[in-house]
Length: 131
Image (cartoon, rainbow, N blue to C red; front, side, top):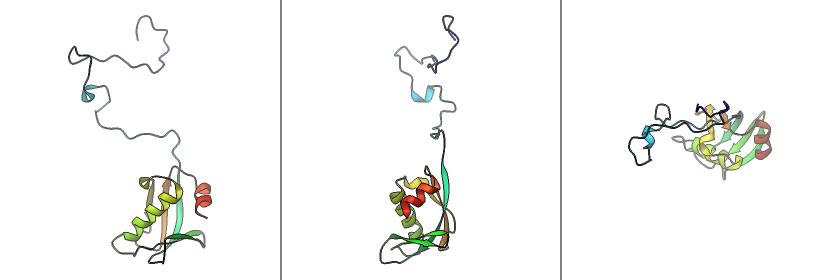
């Protein structure tokens, strides 16, 4: 802290030693911890797990309602080499308005009954958008 400081640190940037007199500091020399890129942290991360029943090789990709307590989704993609899983992730991300990396298959990768994790949205909102 400076001698003229009031004691309240309002998130001010601390001065760092410059490598030369140009006034510029290479990014690798800034005080960023280990210098590695940090993951962006969200203040209140929301994650839900959605039960899904998949019907591959359908005429078109669509939500078909409920199958027991799971959401039934018909996928045009065949269940070969993960094509249906990729199609499911793309479809859910688009339908829910979240990025693809926010949708993950938690269990059931080789089964019709899956549990899908969705980051950034709560379960009641997922159900609203899919049904």
